[in-house]
Length: 254
Ligand SMILES: N[C@@H](CCC(=O)N[C@@H](CS)C(=O)NCC(=O)O)C(=O)O
Image (cartoon, rainbow, N blue to C red; front, top):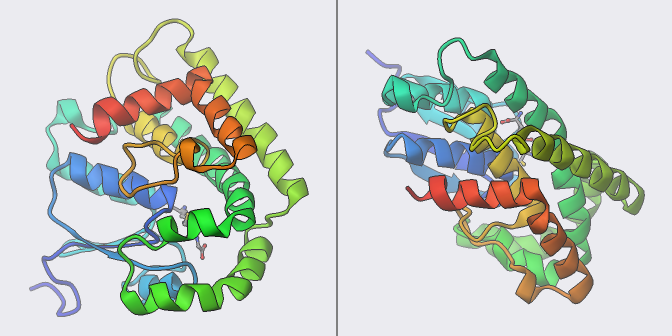
C-alpha cells in the first residue's frame, strides 16, 4: 500500500515563470499525464517544495510512485508513460543526457541571471507575469516582500550588472554552439527526433526569448521599453533562438 503521505494524484510544485518548472510541465503534458500544478512565489516556494518532500528548488513532482525533485528526474519519470519511439531519452543515446546536463548547468542559471537583472529593473512590467496562478495571499504579499526579495535574489543568484553582462556572453556562447550543431541542417539537436535535449534547450532558453507558447504568459517585446525589446528580439533572431521558438511552436502544444 502507498504511504498515506503519497496519493495517486500527481502534484507539481512550481514557481510558475521558472524555466526549470516549464521543462517539467512540458514533459508531463507531452506524456498526457494528469497533474495539479501548485504555484508559488519565490521564497514561499521553499516551504511548498519542502512540504512536498523536495529540497529547496522548484519543480518538485509528487506522485503515487515517488517524489521527484530534479527536473531531469521528472522527464525520466514521464518516459515511463510514452511509447519507446516518443521517449525523451532514446535507449543508448548518451548524447541527449550530456546536452541536457550542459543546458541545465550553464544555459539555465546564466539565462536566469540575465533575466532577473532585467526583471528587477522593470518590476512594474514583470511582476504581474510572476504571479500567474499563485494563491491570492501570496500575490498580495509579493509587493510587500519585493524589497527583501530583490536583495535575496541578487545575493542568492549572484545578480548584478557585472554578472548579468557575463551571463549574456555565456548564453551567447551556448546559442552559438547550438547554432553550429544545427548548421548541417538537422531538424533536432541530436538528429531527426525530438528528445530531452531539445525540450531542455527550448525551455531553458525561455529566460532570454520569452516564447509566446510558454506554459504561462510572459511579457512580450511589444510591451517592453525599446532597449530591452531589442535585446529579446536579437536573441529571437539568433539561429538557436529561432530553433527554440520553432520547437515551442511545433512541440509544446501538440
Ligand atoms: N537542478 C534543478 C534546478 C532547479 C532550479 O534552479 N529551480 C529554481 C527555479 S528557476 C529555484 O527553485 N530557485 C529557487 C531556489 O533555489 O531557492 C532542476 O533541474 O530541477
